[in-house]
Image (tube, rainbow, N blue to C red; front, top):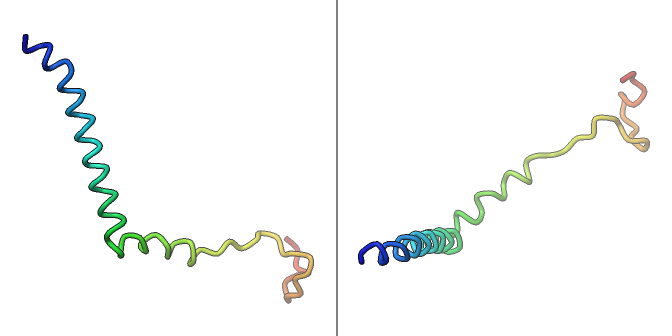
Length: 66
């Protein structure tokens, strides 16, 4: 008789525990102001420089051989 109980209780317990942990993590993310701003610095400091100078670029090195 206990096998019938464990057949539905174990998957239900695992599902509920994962949902509770995900909800707790979401609450930490949205309620903690420092965590929301933590990832914003990386996109601002990285600048993508083109490998080849553009046509309108008038630098001293624009005539250099690549």
